[in-house]
Length: 508
Image (cartoon, rainbow, N blue to C red; front, side):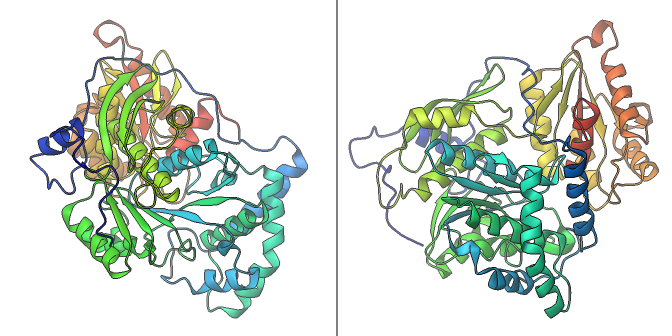
């Protein structure tokens, strides 16, 4: 890890105590070296209107739709994303026969428990605003599998997705024949992403880890910048039962001489990451020290930010997404892009502020505090673990000020569902429990019993069908009198959010 001071550190011409330093100093209940910078006045209470839909729908051409479904069906015969054999030997073999496409462009590699997809989208927007051609690989998808592969800031068209699959299919089958286990669903998609980015070609790839880090299929790239978003407990059966154990896996994406952009972490997790960085001679930029959120105000349709990056301060940034955690994602994304451009090590300067403002103002993140209906307001959020649920609960309370909030919760059975329910209990007046339509959905009766334990019987309703659950929640929110101004939050899983988007106006 480099001991060189960051360019923005005081050199004698700065005031003795800058606003940034004062905020760090005020974080007395946390390790100052690891503290995220809490910020800002909260002056407005405003509701955002629905944003233009940026999620692809089913192809209208019947032949193309059939071709895409055929690809989806073939991929579905492979191991799903929750069945893993912890190694990169199969994806390495696929990269070998494809000619190592992942080596043909630099990359920013992102891991963590929460915030990966939104941070990836912010990084993509920033790089694109600086006239770079960007390939982004994210998971899981909200509505369409094609969302996972993005080039030039948009998901690849369905016909291109099918073409990419057909191009790599012979190589996939070649590797399948040589390995003990066939390539998994996620491994094939990763191969498709890396091959398509090389073919485009892109100037840089922004790659989100599927699970963990060390043995994740994405980890055959040499990420020039490694981003680690907040680590908390999730996938504990595969990654470990403590933040420290999980951090061991996630720090596996740190490559020699890389720059690590480290979001606020539990102390034990941060210690693991810092030790890994020292081992491989990587440089670490820590949220709360080298970068962070200086100030944050609520604004109509989002929030107004001042961010401290590796090269200096960026003010008057509008982010059209609610939540303190989204502001911190923005700080991480900005610092990752600065690190990619060499700011903070080779260069002591800031990025063009007007370009940064334009990029952040364009950011969307479907299914993350997304308003999809007004009167009553219906918000979708993909929170699926306790840490994510706590962040969402805080953000909804702050940004919307509902007189009453009705929850629709439909989680997957392999999550800490009690923890999610407990996180939402203080903000939900009532909760309608339901299920999404995948094999991973939690049994509704089991979920209802757990919800009654957390909320009490009078606050829980059960609707096994998600459409009926949303309808019931909207009905409750539309009640007159003191309940005028109520809202609905649909949450618990990315699968739930995807189905809700379709039910509330999307196409399939």
